[in-house]
Amino acid sequence: MRILGLLILMGLSSCSKDSDPIVATRANISGSVNLYDEGTTPSDKSGMTVSVVGLTPAVSSVTDSDGKFLLADVPFGTYTLSYAKAGYGTYQKPSVVHSNTGTSTVITSTPSLGKVSTTQVTLAEVRTSGSDIILSATTNPAGSSGNRRYIRFFLSNSASVSKDNYSYVSPAFVAQINPFETTLTAANLSSWGFASGQTVYIKVYGDSFWSNEYEDAGLGRKVFPNLNATASNTVSFLVP
Image (cartoon, rainbow, N blue to C red; front, side, top):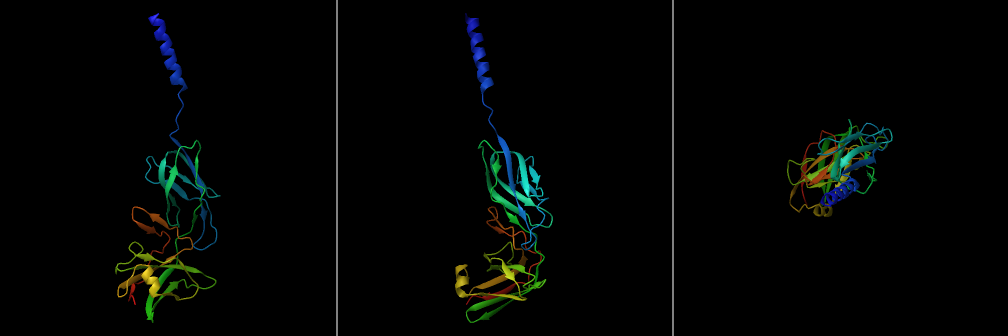
């Protein structure tokens, strides 16, 4: 009887193990991109490498002609995805949540990414007009109504202002005349954290319509991958 009881228990144990559900630990991540030149003209969507940052072994995919990609068998977790293609500024999409929902994770927000800017700012100038500050930027190629160029101003209290060291960054401006001019009021400067009597330093970069900008939590600032590598001269002024 004891032997029979042991055999029954062993049989039940075996059946239980055989019926245990298989728990999924990974699944696919899919999505797509839209690619453009440095303006608003669509470009070939294929050939962009999308990869999971920091994952070992590496997982990556290359977009097809429709801009679609599929990252296969990615372990569940929260990731940053990197998007890179020759001629394009590398873009990163942080905080992609990939959890076990019983199906693949589909990224529904499709980023629009552009090429690195060919616009070089050859001269930046600043002058005071009453309580306003007039900034001007000369570009090469020259901006015109038929050849829109894009530029961005970086401001700081530090003379070493740059795309990596700034207190305030402007939106991208469309330069359709050369030189391009914009006006900063005392109210503008105050809202950006600059006080009366402070010296503000400015550097100007050529940018693209799609700047590929993203927030880098590690750096604690926005990154602008599409800026032209050559910045303008640094100019400065005293806040009125």
